[in-house]
Structure formats: C-alpha cells, structure tokens
Length: 402
Image (cartoon, rainbow, N blue to C red):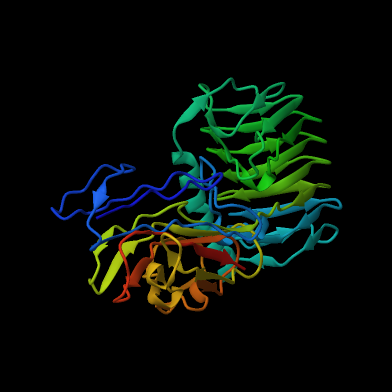
C-alpha cells in the first residue's frame, strides 16, 4: 500500500478536488488523505487556462450578446433621419423601413443597410438582445435620477420605470474590465443637456446596456456610454456623443450633428479552473470524464465573426514523473462534441476528436457578422499505459483562441 498525497496548490488557483476509489469501492471525502492499494489509480488533471490576453475569469453578469446587431452603430425599424454633419462609425441599418435620409451631409464609416438581409438579421438579433437585457436578474432598484451617483457592476431598475441623467453618472467596474452594467427602463431614458457618463475602474462602454421600454432622448451636448436597446425610438439631439450604439427595434433613430461610435469588445475564452476525471484501477484500458463548459465570446462587433479555438496538453504525471509515473499527452484524447449553446449568426463547427500529442482545433466559427459566442463541454479520454503505477496524476490542458 502507498499513501497518495494531494497535489500542492498552485498560486492563485483553487484547490483541486478529487474522488479516489479504494479496494472496497468506497469514495473518501474530497481532499482527504488515506491509504490506497497500489493497484488503484487516482487520476486528477488540474486544468489551467491560457487566454489571448487574460485569465479565464468571467463577469458576474455575462455580457448581453448583440449578435449581428453588434456590427451596427445605428439601427432603426421605421426610419433613420439625420440633420447636419453627424459622424457614424460602424454600420447603419434599417429594417423593415426603407427611408434613410441625411447621408450626406452625415457620414458613415461602415456600410448602410436599408431593408436588406443584413439589417433584417440585425433586427432579429436586437430583439433577442433586448429580451435578454430585460430579463436579467436580480435587479437593484435605484432612484430615477442617476446623475450625481456612482454605480458598480450589476442590473438596475427604478420604481418609476424611467431613468434620467442630469450632471454626471459614474460607472465603476472596480478593476474588472469584464464587468457588466444593465439598466432596465420600463418606459423612457432621458439625458439632460451637457450630461455625461464617466467610466472608471476599467469599465468598458461595450459592457454597458440601456434597455428602454419605449423611447430614449439624449439632450443637447450630452455624452453617453453604452448601447441603447430601445423598443420604439431614439432621438439624439444636437451635438451628442455616444460611445456605443443607438439601436431601435420598431421606431426611428433621429440624429442632428452627432458623433456615434460603436464600442467594441474583445475575443476571449473561459474554461474551468480545475476538473476531476475520477479514478480508475491500474490495468483498466482508459478513463473518461467531462472537462466542463468552455466558452468563447466574440464581442468585436466586426464584419467577420471568424475565430478558431485550439487546445493542447502537457503530459500527466505523479510522484517523480519517472516513466512509470507518466501518461504521455499523446494518450489523452479530446472530443469537443456539439455546441451546447451559441449566439450570433456565425457557422459554428466543432473540431475533429483526436489525441493531444499535438495541438488540435477545438472549435471554430466562420461567416456571419457582429457578436457571437459558443459553449461546448468536451470529453477527455485517457488511455492508461499497461505499466502505469498508482498515484494522483496531474496535467495541464490549455485553450486559446484567435
């Protein structure tokens, strides 16, 4: 008999839990230490995350996915009307209406989609995003007047069902660039002249959402951060700056010498910090288990949704990592399975199952526009060498996306 000791905890990582089976078939409590027969193999991989620019932490509230609407800075249902030299950065769209006026003198750094398939898809995805934002819970009820206040990430509504901003509203992400703010206005959003929204603590405009049950009106010379998702219309009066989007489902978007710049996010991936594949007796042919949910979120809002997620692995070892204490990475296979959920209009394709002796494609997306996301729950299968010794084996499976 030998004593199988728990794996030392990595700095910044959660302590792995495992199930180990003894000769009687009982399962001791997670994290316990007891003697086991050498014929028993306890296999516990510790999953590490490799993300393009950050660890795989997720915001407490997930971002509202805009789908194809993410490519648009301005989107309306009936008409888009502009007066003066408004500057729109991002696509401008209209569906089912057909009337877009005032461009020129207004300019669009993007494509104008009037009652075409792209605008229709954007409107469909806007409806889904609006419903998502409206259903977010739990909501904290705050005063109608947001000016002069500082709010941290979360979902907010008001007893009156309206919001107004007079002066400055500060949104503080508290150091989390993934922090999400959702404002649920059952009726209207009105900003006063020269009012502002200030982002601090790493807050990003693309993670701020204003769900408006009727219409929004932005006062002269005001500045707003975030995406307006309005059921009816959006009126942007003279000299307004919007760091985000003005998206109206049924009614008009009206502009007057304004600056509308769609705020885009990043391409990111999140995976479980740890996973437990369970236990198997030495001599068993293989061991299989679920890794847990892997999610890619593409908030870049661009004309192409294309991305590819790849996966690789280290060897899995125990003890001194001698040959009998090593399971080579080529003995570890990865099967992504089908997507468990997706958002957006891209074509989602799982990678071909295979061994991790070399990096594999885990999942990919092609075609479509705007925001999208995909979640899958891969199965890990480990072929156990005939000479493997009992022990708690750990390894690192790494995902990245580009």
